[in-house]
Image (cartoon, rainbow, N blue to C red; front, side, top):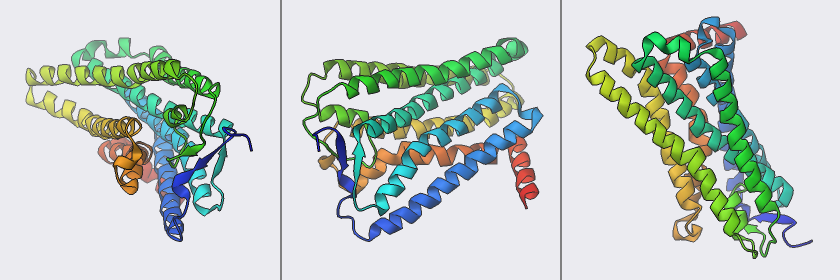
Length: 305
């Protein structure tokens, strides 16, 4: 077997019968993620009064969650019950592409949501002229195409490298871990990886922070009723943002320090947070906090019975 043609997923070795418990937990989590996000998507699609920028962007978050977890959970569950833990190089790069496209899409969609709330609060009379269906369609298209293009180029740069090792100490394929296994010059990969991180994570999160600071300034100068309505729509976004920011920080930090510096179990949990917590937390937060979405979800569940 040619070195670099396949990768060994080392963390699945010698975990014994506990893998069946992990399989059951992973299966339940994946089913919950798919069901919760499908309910959000259906509720917004079926209810015409929810065909507004804020709700459409919420549905985009749910679609992105299903997209990202579809690349992670099926492979994870297969590895947990399999006796061999090999993955071809092409399949590994494809999985990394989907997972990190998901993460990049998530941060840009959150940026669009912050922009939408900023326009709605700072320029309520001009909101409908700014957030038109056409502009929203363009923004959503860019939020999908740009991250996938950048991550795709990063995957191509990784595919051209010569591998000097094939042991991955992750439970999923990680582009930076693949690059570290190479014995070729990886300067281009590292520089482009930093460019992707800057344009798809750091810059969107910086813009989100700026938007919410401006919103808080506006709210301080406004009436109590105005502040109450603004906080009611912004707090769920802030909760989701804080959770995602912590998850991404853990992932970026762990990928750039030696895994053995932390207990294996803790390292795995922290590295998986961005793939598990946001996809299951997002629909719960929006489904419980927005009455229109909650009402439609209850209607769908009653119709299913």
